[in-house]
Image (cartoon, rainbow, N blue to C red):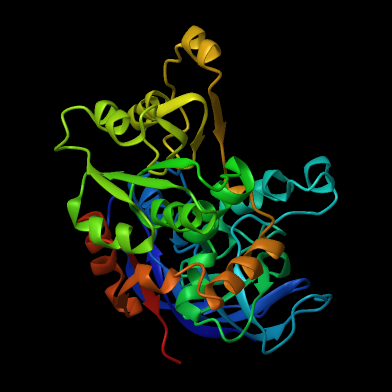
Length: 371
């Protein structure tokens, strides 16, 4: 059975999204029909719009979302009708070398279909009169309804509001997981966070959760300061106003930071992150620059200072474990994700939501679906 759904479609790079009705086919084997509750507005979607992500078009965008399971296809065993689910854009097979050793975030089994914007069998469930329409990350969260692979669905506590659950699908897990899973920040350590977007603010929350002694947030936009402090930052530096961030960090910390997280995805900031790190400290790259991005490394200085430089994709998370865990931490009041949600939009306002994000408005914008 084919249903109609309103969705935000990108037809050409560097253009506005078109909100229109699409056909949505019923779920096939190991697929799930989800009625969307909320979807976040993320910079990664802008990478698709700009062409940096090289996504095949046309495509329904949105990769950070949560909703209600309303029907399931054959051979679906781990999701039931009525479940509230967070959607993951990085499905894993559970059988490969990386999965077996517990690093499901490094699984490449479904890299091709996810990258192409299809479901795992290589086909599309969205279509219009011109033919198939792809869905970003095998999800396409900026649609009233979606059909997604079962492995992309993670059931969570139904008491978690959809707008909070949606952020677990990308920003929160990416930032919190980088702190807990990859860098493993310890109580009393000093943390520097470059970037106060959704991911950077999630790093701040997690650093506070782990008991960091200092959490210093750096951003070019002072409007993010109050929210960063509310979420756990002890200090906020405006990068474009400070003549020498490294000098200021030494004044604040004495020796530099134990941990530096680059949460923007710019190579020049990644280079700066290494300078902000103290001897014996760790730098974690969380943001993504373009595929050809490189930086120059002062290898002798790094060796002598015993600095560790690391990357973290999707919070180095096992989504079926960590989505639920971070949701529990929210319900316990230990991850105040709700403070990040300060802009709500209808789907037809998606281009306004994107403009607001690019204008630097603090916090996370969320598309809320009324059914």
